[in-house]
Structures are given as C-alpha cells and as structure tokens.
Image (cartoon, rainbow, N blue to C red; front, side, top):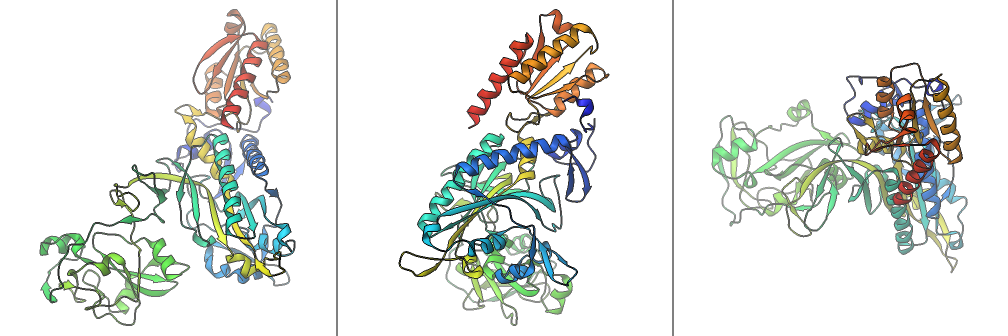
Length: 571
C-alpha cells in the first residue's frame, strides 16, 4: 500500500480537547475522526487495527471452546421489561418506536437476547455446557463520554455467555474465559491485572475486572503490597481504624458556633474525626435517604446503591434538604423520622460519637446507636482509601489509577429464571441454567494498546495489532537505483508474508520520518541514496531504535524473523 493512496491525514498537534495520550495519538495519526460526543469514524488505518484486535479475540475465544454467534442490536423492549432492566438501565438505554408504535431498545448489552436464544435451543443437560460469544455494536447513552475511545456512546464489544448445569461446571467455564482473556491482553500488548469488581447493572455473584494500570485511567484501584489483594474502589473491602473505646455516657448538647464540617467540629471539641458521626443526604430512585457514617470515612455510593437495591443514587439537592427539615452541618439521625436511616457499620459499632443536634450551631456529645438512634439498615458502605488496612493481611492499601479492559461475571440463575432458560437434567427434572458473562470493549482495548505502547514521537504498535508490518520510507523516488532497490524490497517482503506501507511521497525526509514514528509500525525501512552507498536499505526497530543496513532480501528475512519471534513470545 502506498501512503499517498491511503485515506489518512496526520496532524502535527492534537486538538486541545484531547487529554489522554491515546486520544491525542488517535487523532494525530489519523486513525479516527470525531463525529459527535462519544461517536467516532474509523479511517482505513484505524479499522485495520480494530480488525486485528477482533482476530486475536476470535482466535482465543475459539481456542477456549466458545462458539461465535451474531445477535441483533435492536431489541424488543419486552425482553428488557421481562428481565427488569428496562427501568434499571434508566436513561442509559436508547429507546425508539417503530412505525407500528412498538417500542424497541438499542442493545447496551445482550444478556436478554442471548437468554432468548438459549431458551429456544437448550433443552437437555446433554446440550451443556456451552459458551456463546459475539463481536457486536452496543449503544449506551453515556452522560459524559470521555477519553477518546475510553467511554463511548456507540462501541463494539466482544460479549460471551456461558450456560452450565451447575456452579461447579460454571467455575470451569469461567476459568476458561479468564484464561482466554489473559492471552488476549498479552497478545495485544496490554499488561493487565485481575481485580475484584462490582457487578453493576449486569448483576450476578462473583465479578472480576482486568485492569490496565495507568495514570490516565478513570478507575481507582486498591492494591495490597502484602498479600496481593486487588479491587476497584467500588468493591474494595478494608478494615477501618478502630473506634475509640468507652462506656456509653449521657448525651450532652454543646454550642458549636459556625462549625459545620467534621474537621471544624472535631477541632473545636477536641476530638478525633473518628469520634464524630457524619450525616449525608441522598436520593435513592428519587426517595430521600439519610446516611450515617463515622466522621473519618466517606460513603461509597456504589455500595450504598447495592445495599438499598436501588437503580440510582444521587446526592440530595438543597431544596429537598430544606423541605425535609434537615440541617446541613448540624444533622444527625437522633430524632429523625419519616426517612430511612442507612448506617455504615462503623457508626453502629462506635460509642460516644459527636453528632449534630439538628439545629444550627449545636451538636450532641456521646451519641450512641440503639440508645439515641436506630438505623433502618446497617451495611458496609464506606469507601476504601489509600492507607486503610487490608482485610486479608492488615497491611496498608495503596491506590493506583487504571482502565477497565474486560469484565467477567458469574451470573448464576439470575437471568435464566427470569428469561426462561431451563434444561431437563438426567432425571427429567426442569432446572435453570447457571450462567456466566464475559465482556471486552474493542475500541477501549485499542486505546489501551496505545496508552501502553507509545513514546514522545508517536505510537509503537505491537506486531499482532499493527496496521502494517513495515513502514518503508523512500528518499529519491524516481531515481533508477532507488526504484530498483524498492522493487526488490517489495518482492522480498511479499515472499516473507509481510505487508508494507510505502511512503514515496514528494515530501521532505523529515516529514516522512516524523510520520513513520507517529504511525508506529514495528519496523521502518529506509531506501535512500545514502543507504545504498552503505550497501543496502536501513532497517530500524521502532521500539528499540536499533538500526542495521541490510540487503533487501536480508531485511525482509530479518523483519519476518523479528515478527515471528515477537508473536510467539506473546502467545
């Protein structure tokens, strides 16, 4: 392929709105063109990378024993109502109505549709286990698309679903998908770690994310340097600092003029933040909720949502706070009625806490759960932070940023029972299939590949995903000796099974070399009068910068060997 024939437009500078390295390089290298927030057009160069990623995914999923299917992206809304997720997905779900006034949704995921397919094809235990997968377009009305390809409104996902007779065989299906994911990310050149994760709107039992650790990531990951425990912040468990011991003392009302925050109240009264009771106001699916937690901790809104079984949790607006008669800065659950009180266990187990008096500029000393107030629900809803003690070994947790690359779930019978996915066991008894779910975002993986493989000059593609194997820079095209060497090189590359991108444009060498570094093919070969004087063509490794002058035939053989060795090592 001649670069002058390729539909690509490189940029010297990325647009100002591109913040992540991958986003900047995607735009500068001309791999994508933005259409609207969360929507991108892929150019031929970018689409080649996507297809290479999909090829790796297909090879590894097939290797794991999964079978590929293709499901509609347009779903009858009845399926989503049957599962209960039409309401759960809320505004994330794109809805539309056809000419017959029948309502549909654009699939954000495919648990409902795959369950429909399975319910009509799985009959007996002899049909199980089976894992089905597809690579299909998804649609989610993301409120804040960001990071280029990191969070999109229309994207491609490899989603797989396993169906088993029980939890023991589900474990085997889950492990097979887990191992396939490890191979996929390794071949794609993205280092990942598995972390415990929240299942979110998918639901289910066990759940793990594969995370690429990078400061560009949008997720917070808690890591234990002692035992290796890893979880995202939504799921992470920890041991809070111990409460200050003491026998319950009488409640004492104290004047705290102008002190509204935990830090201000604690300093004024000469206590530690862990000796205070924090009040936080939320709306859960539109209903007011009073949250009580120890003052040195923060609320984990995902854990709160799960504890309440809510679809959505958001901070309460000031108008509702005033309407309910709550006093921000001086509130406590003491005497509160008509609002459910959700308490973190830290607030229940501690004694003699300082809490609000529910009137401006006053607080209460020695507030105790069970005597002075009663929680409607007690749950662990505190957010883990750096320095908190690991629940497994007690060492201090550390935090890192990361990008979620893939997610695996043990769904159990959640969807099977709702969607009618049953089989007859060996005794003729009708039983629900036990399901698993496994997803990888293709465009997000593309972005992570660039995040993990770039330098100040541009992209450094791993061999298996690179759009071309070799970037050939021609200096002096039209000269007989140059054209002859180029022809010999092309022939040798073709015979070695290598595909080159050839830059014989009438541009300066500087522009060509900059574009070669920016586009990032694993090898660059320069055909120039200088290289011919030195005995051949110059071969440069994009990752290491190592250069050699070889004959065209030797260059092709060396590049083929390097490609083969790198791919073999990755597998």
